[in-house]
Length: 92
Image 1 (cartoon, helix red, strand yellow):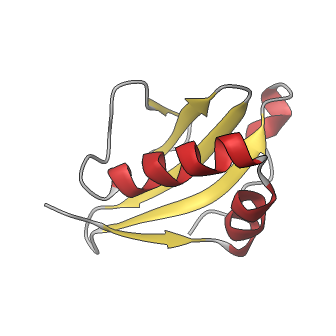
Image 2 (tube, rainbow, N blue to C red):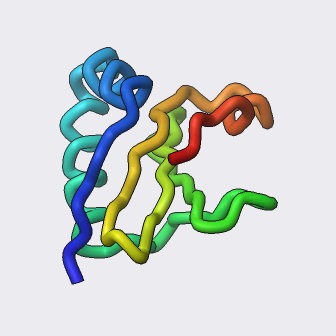
């Protein structure tokens, strides 16, 4: 089943601000989430059900699944700095 992909405001700004060589890879990865919501390498965040992360070199694509509505919410795209990377997420 294909899901719709929606972005938080933070994720939209972050995608635009990514360096060019990562921006295209991020877009392809995000488009792939519409077809495959849990691709190889996706890991669920501890203590946060239905919230996953994908690695993109030093960057993390953080997304939340809404299986009832068929939506993949791209919550944030952040540089991995430590555990604080996953704090203060505005989940949908």
